[in-house]
Image 1 (tube, helix red, strand yellow):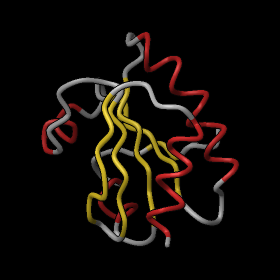
Image 2: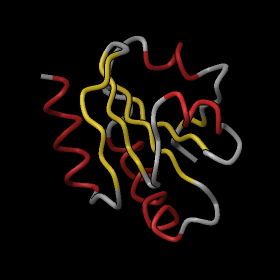
Image 3: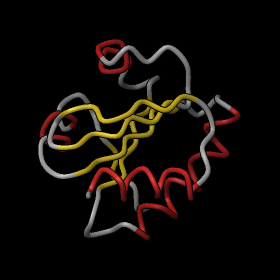
Image 4: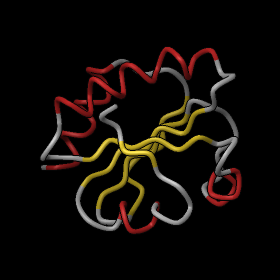
Length: 105
């Protein structure tokens, strides 16, 4: 696996510097299962430029609540600790890559 798995203990340190895309998902979520391989591929493609991470909302419910995750998959793009964009629902690799590249500019 290439995407970094985050927990409530590692989340805030990870998003503090640079660009991080976090996928909030759950094992029982059908669209999440489609999104995960896209996120994994993207992690390989942007390695060294941005971090691609994932949070299992079943295991990290408190973190999901803090960030207002109401439906999954939800992907949140952070830059230097700030939310750049919140994307809800299944997203293509190209759409995500474009948003990551735009946030790095």
